[in-house]
Image (cartoon, rainbow, N blue to C red; front, top):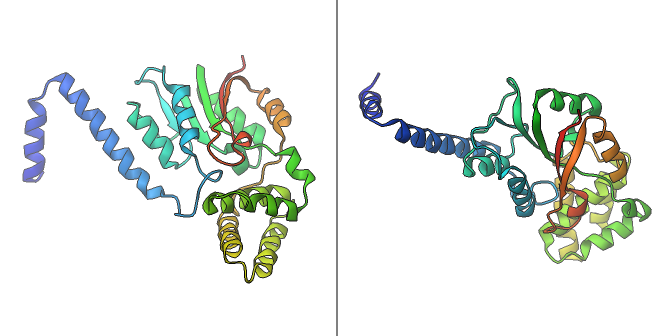
Amino acid sequence: MNLSEKLISKIISKLSISTLEWLETKIRQAFFIKKAFVYCWPNNYFPPWRFSAGDIENCGKAIFDLNRECRVLILDPVPELRNLTVSMGFKPELSVDGNFDVVLSDIALNMVKVEDDFLKGIKNILFPDGIFVVRFHFLDGALLELTAEEILEKSLGILDDRLAANAISGRIFDKFSDFKDAIEFIREAVKLAEGKPRRKSILLRALGLMLNGSRIRKATHNRIQLENLLAKFFDIIDVKIAGDYPDSKFYPVYVLKIRL
């Protein structure tokens, strides 16, 4: 043990229990916030690919009344969820060990192969009165009726170029059954955008987002299908919509309890 460690140990030994509890909370906050930066989002990633401020606010409302000593599991390396829970005074955990009062996740079903097994697994690690707070993505039925070109034109009408690029990538991603076809469509659109700087810039951003998001499965359910799937394992307590980015109504935060 070096000199600084000895000094810290000596100081700690003199502290009261209440001060030690306060210090533990501050250390955990610093640890999780610093560790969250390991998983930083690329600068071009905006909703719907990541949580918006509204999404995070909705997650916070879902867990606001819970005891701060309850066991909280964050399934994904999502900095926003870690920062949220720590700032609220919870002590989030990152590994599945035992049962939990709360499980938090984002776009969970889009990244698993066997949805029933995943949902059953979440049910099994929750305490009987625990909750699953998760942002899901379901298909926009009207979107499927539009051609790819119509989706593109609709998305280019979004004034914020960053949100437009993210909306294009998400909408085209859902439109095509084959991911390679979606990529090829954007590439062709980029070629046709010569002489239109704003359009080309947005399309190039969208292309980069889609290439980077290739590991994520597209949404395969509409809202009714999604909720029928959830009903096998959970009761829906609340559905919260952010409203602060395009298509947010298709990316709601669900609050679920185990169906007994």
